[in-house]
Length: 110
Length: 117
Image 1: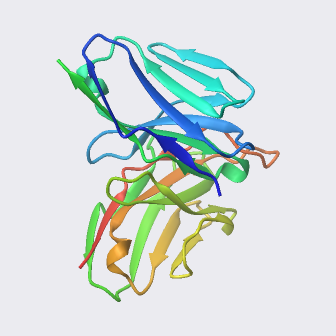
Image 2 (image 1 turned 60 degrees about the vertical axis):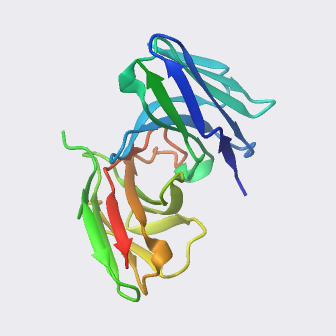
């Protein structure tokens, strides 16, 4: 079955860039997503990328996709304390069935 | 424009009981998906409803069932509750593309926290 893996924890200083990495196994993935979850809250869609794209930039967020290696990354520029949360990588094949990773907890140190 | 809403917010049940969770999709959305998120884990896909029918299902037993109403709202039912069913249950809504292919955005509700004692 499909599998999505992420490192569990990342700690950065405020103002630095954060890079969260993800690998996936489903070669039929059509869309790849990054979601943010703050404590006690649901999931907020941050950005997504189509599988035929290499890069997508959206304000402070940059998504890089290496389809050959099935590797996805999310870079957050000028990381702020409000960016502290759990970030989930997810992929989607047909019919919007989304497979999530276990999440990376981002800690931003003031 | 209201986003995805879920009720109740929290629920406590005992083993063997049955529970019903409710979801109202974002205005204009016609597809509802349900996910289970255990503590410290990523959400796991339970099933998806479109046009009042289950379109796709994840690896969950038949104790998990659902329903979609003509107004696109949805219910998740879990029978014979087990301690392991304790989790955050998330509902997500989206708009099925006219071609039937995947769309690019699922919007999630805040979830229902179910505790089974």
